[in-house]
Length: 463
Ligand code: ARG
Image (cartoon, rainbow, N blue to C red):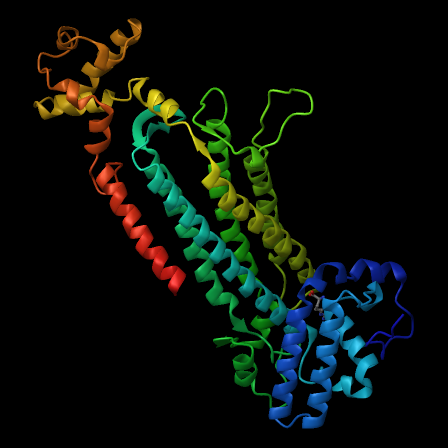
């Protein structure tokens, strides 16, 4: 077992139980490449500021490179007695390059080091999440284009309400994921701040050059307050919040796919490659993928509550409690990424049952509002029109007919204002295409939305 790096003032060895209890290496080893990259930049800065010699810097940087290769290849030995990834790398550096390794930690503390590592890790993951979401948005636009004029019932309270275009539906999710992209992009601004040089909490007496370290590590901003820099985990809270909202969107889409693929709806069929069978009921094809996305959503919410609770009431500055930020952050990343990924792959393979959607849209009095609007156009106040149509619906329901299946005479018994031209208004085509208000479901609106989305995506992918 290697010697710990902080035993100077201790007379007793750490209890094995405490070593295991305080160790975070199983979790934070994921940060190794960032830790090494940060250390290399720190060495370069120390050399530039003449805090260490050029020779020492070269030795340290070469040693760090060797360690990176060892970990990359899976040849590195991890050990709970060395607490975390920072201690592991520093201890190994000692074994590799000897005493010079003792200079690496000059003007630095694990408190600013860990903040740096997590920020570097998370900016990569956030950019990756944005890329994946942009791909998902592309898939949704493609689906909207392919199904441009498919009509289905729109629902409120899960009761058939008014017909809408399926393409409008897909574009609704496009809007939701666009907001997610904005949230992650915005959160990236606050992740991308360089904390190194804050040292333990108060800054350092060495003449360090933080701007140089920031430029080496490609940080556009440097933290302004050393106490805040080592205590701040807002950027993690923000990421998990954005992830939670994104999971809300994915879970709503999941719920919809689960409902729509049931025999009761029969609107879609999931691809065989993304569904599973039952071990007992041979006829079954289960929507496990959307169900699991829906189920995993709760775990991300749990991570959000964990990190908020962990940070609540913590006195400044660094507290060891904060080591618990990593399991929740990594947990969220490990859920969010594959959830987006399965949707990118699965959605293009959905089988859309146009017929079932269309049939459902023509049953259940979805044209009642249109008939009321028709009456309004003849000069009747909306509330009165609403009442007339309500009575007509009750009458038709009793006859097991739809409004448009009643005769003109029958309709006129509810209002003498109704004329033959009402039947045109009651068709699916008119119900969709007369809803031209900005953001409404009319075909021309949806086409314009798709065009705008394609332009936006083209610029996003280019940029
Ligand atoms: N493993 C620790 C963490 O993740 C690193 C910082 C430790 N700092 C300390 N003063 N013990 O938070």
